[in-house]
Image (cartoon, rainbow, N blue to C red; front, side, top):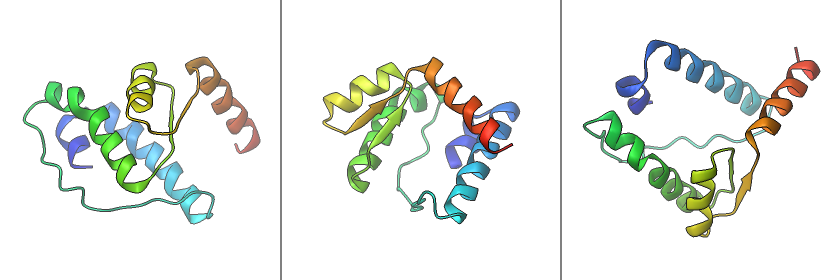
Length: 107
């Protein structure tokens, strides 16, 4: 959240907040688990540096938590596979279809 506060614009913060709300709701329904902890990563001095290191930090956390990654980012998928992280790659157009199906199922 510290990174979001520093680097995200107003529209991005709202979208992220909405997405976190959905995830928290799923966690309250025991459909997913959310792990919160202080990662100890420093706040990077620029948005560009943050974006260049973001995938590596996510992979580091995934390794520490033994997580399976789900992504529609092809570059991240490649990095995760090279790091031997189990990864499920969903094509972006399929992700949009999944969102539409979910919206129909749970308006």
